[in-house]
Length: 78
Image (cartoon, rainbow, N blue to C red; front, side, top):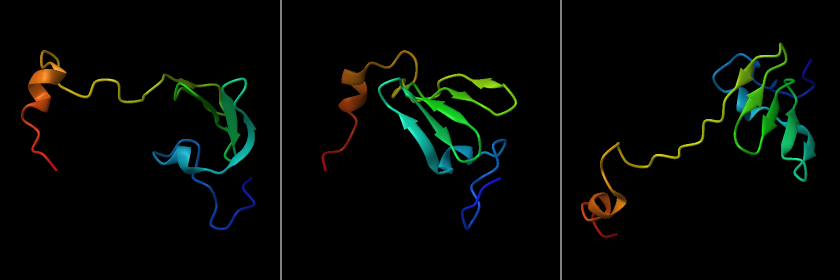
């Protein structure tokens, strides 16, 4: 299916998002990857078999119950 060398990752593999983009529609918020996956700007995915992967971007930078003010006071200065 993939004409690239090395071939793009399998759509079921853990590295599936590393496949090359073949069609991009940023105005609509989606792109088609070489391995048949449709990725959405919210990081959700639609796999070739129809399985939907919910958005999975990191939104919680700190454990539940820890405010960013408290957490940042424990980060050493660079």
